Image (cartoon, rainbow over all chains, first blue to last red; front, top):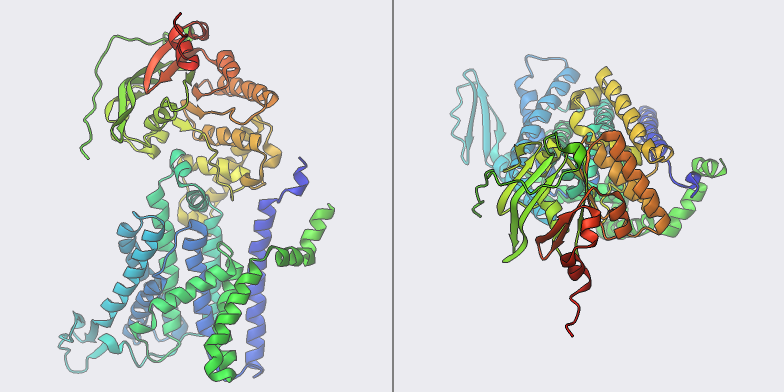
Length: 353
Length: 280
């Protein structure tokens, strides 16, 4: 058998990574230029930050779904943990850190830490399960997070932080501020999330995920995905690696949640429901499991699409669904893939070698 | 489930060790090993001692419990009775991962490779337990990440070169031809630095010339690493050629143990394989 005809995985992977970085950087530059030359409509400009957040969400979920091979249906839960803890932290730090980008960065780090803790705690019971059971339990935990945050009150006064559950019993001193108000969420958020911040977060997320995947941990993730029994037989600690991927994914989702929340003046826990989890899963599935560039493109396309379809008013979601189905069919069609493969200049060169 | 408490019971050694291993401690001792699966004694009263550099064969008709023995040794199943001593250590309470760390590596009857990983990565992932760098070094690409990754890659290529597979290092494991997949599985097992290698039907589905090649490869591995090997195999020419000692299993029990010559002439073995001669 001639080895030339077999795919060289290393080369394909390296190329895919550089291509992903390049596409993100070019897209950022183009969007920056377009928005500064007023070429972008204001509604589109307002969507730049949420798109970045969704891209990070898709990349982080892809780490669990595509690389580790476990279906998680509660990813929006980690986003909301990040959103609430990040925004609360930003409000608390409002006076101490006056430079907004720094405050945003610190808030995102705090959000990532809180989401990672949530991921770790949820991971303890969840990662003992496999396959469908794991998916269902993550769904349940996503809903639990939402309910908890819907009944969570956090206030700050001169005496420090106070929190209560179910009803507001924080009894703040005069001049105190109730930050998280249960089902009313957080309002009066300073909109400090910016497009460059989103771009940087996306680049950092990509760097973390790519470097992790191309390390001993990443090999372990993929080995567990491909064959759990064989992975155990060569001495891999399955629970440890699953937990590592799960926590890392939750942390990135938390940072994305903070970015997302600080683009709006009000945020409520109901925003991060099951539908959001599924939406992110759709990004991953449409973009291709394990394919980060695909996730990013899918996240951007599926966030812009509903806006662009507004002119069709009541047929909007119908068209959205049709486009989604057609895209899914087309991207999984062997003949179309073959056709696109023939257009790929890199591959042609390789065959000629 | 109440796990039967196992402890080491000294029994008069019924071991057959190759002469070169007599002076050394055996790598594996199974004493009274047994498991009941669904009310059936799948393996019962299994006593076996494997010398430090022995190549042992485990043969028997289909369904005799050969793979079950491997699954017991690697703790895929927890034994209901008996003791497994690996390098003199009781493996009671260990799981598959810990047994691998203690020195048992295996291949599978139906090939279990990480199909989407490259050939080199299949080998490198097996070296995971000897790599030290942490997640942070990986993400930030610190010097120890690079150093260890380069060392691991070199070692992977060296191991692959035993089977002359170093030029396939970057190919997805799933796209390899069948024989190469079997060989890769052996390399992957070797990468975990075992003291005992379990090969489950390594020659299954191979033609005679491939089997002959495999025989040379097993000899080569044995010579290079000086480890003990147990192989389950139906290809008698391979077994008789390569093994120092053979253990025959039927209905979960050992019916014969001995050198290849002894086994070939053992009436119980002939009966198990060919059935009893009709009287009259």
